[in-house]
Amino acid sequence: MKAWWRSLLDRLGRPVALLALALAVTVTAMGTFVLVEDDDPEPGASADRAFLDGAATSDLIAVTSDLVNRTFSVDPKQRKKQQRFRADHLATVAQEQFRELYAPYLSKKTAAITLVTTTSGVGVVRLTDDEAEVLVIADQMAVAPDGRSNAGTAQVRLSLTRGSGSWQISSIDPI
Image 1 (cartoon, one colour):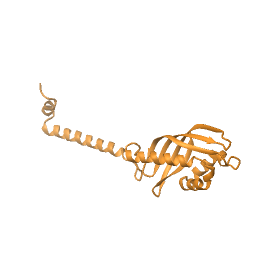
Image 2 (image 1 turned 60 degrees about the vertical axis):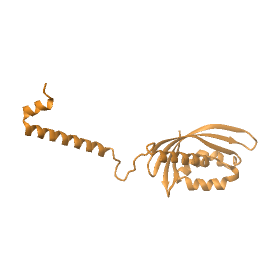
Image 3 (image 1 turned 180 degrees about the vertical axis):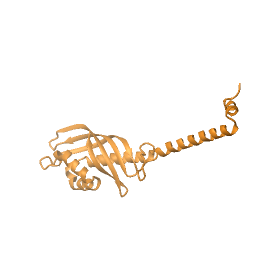
């Protein structure tokens, strides 16, 4: 039994068979090139590194946990310090969203309530050089001066941007 390529050579003749083979190799190479080019991000866009870059993903998770714990906790004895932290780590839109969500804890009437937020989980949805989206689950415990308390779990989607080397919360979306 003849090999398939030998019978092709016999039928087409050597020059035509070589031309067909060269054409097939060229088409295959061009197809591969097109597929590889389609995987590249848009010019100027950063590639999504979530979980592909373990160190960057771990760093973002640690930074997000710290940001959430410090941003979403309210201590009446440290109001000024916490306001400065939020001003530095929340973009303007996120500051407005925070005030809307946490108005009950920031009003003068409830100024003595302490709210402690502890991050229990962070999921990285998207991570580029200067933007990220994360899902956060946090435990919260509110304590009134008279000893009454309440606890619950908060779920939030955060958009973050990196400016001057540090991450800042740019959007807060409760889930």
